[in-house]
Amino acid sequence: MRAAVEALQDGLTDEPGRFLASLIADVDALGRLVDDIFLMARLESGEIDLSAEIIDLTEIVDEAMEVFRPLALARGVSQRLDADARVLAVGAPEAVARVVRNILDNAVRHSPQGGEVVIHVSRDSAARCTVMDQGAGFSEEFAARAFAEFTRDDASRTRKAGGTGLGLAIARSYVVALGGEIHADPGPGGKVSFWLPSPDGRDEIASRSAVDDAFQTVGDHR
Image (cartoon, rainbow, N blue to C red):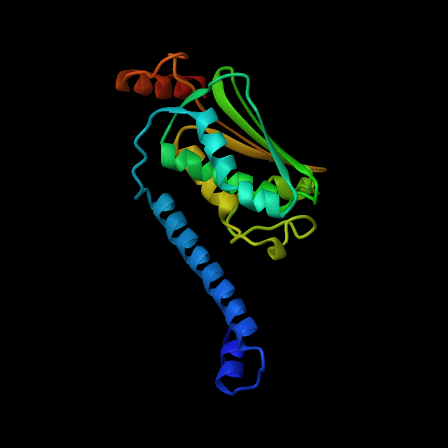
């Protein structure tokens, strides 16, 4: 960025528009990085209040897919939601939406041209979401530490694809704070799964006491 600015100041380029476009992209990337660093700091210090409620995980996934539709189309990647029914979970809507978006962003950006990203949502003893892409995926060694801050698997997830290296770390912090778990499987193909507590009332929105009971049940099983 400094080199580009100095070149513009000294009049050393006859393509100022291209230099400015590059600077804008770099500033945006730095802005995202700073935002993610502050968010991680707040999550680690417990400053973010995650008020739990009953959420529709299937709907949140569907909305996230709409957000990434333009990026997927631009990269020639299709998205498919695999869910038999509405899946309720105990969580904070904005936090869970951020988790899904971070994982989906990773999957779309690392899918090959013409590839497909499949998001599977299901429920057994918990509400589960699995995002799969057809990219190289994580190496077996890296899968175990994929959720650490600023980590990248150079063989399959490079900086060229964008991102700050904090997306999965932020996703993990939110999921753990909500009483769930998250993990990544080694390739071939990217696969990241997480689960959240599932409320007892499967067909209707539960009361606040039911939310508390759901957290207690998950704690007992763990």
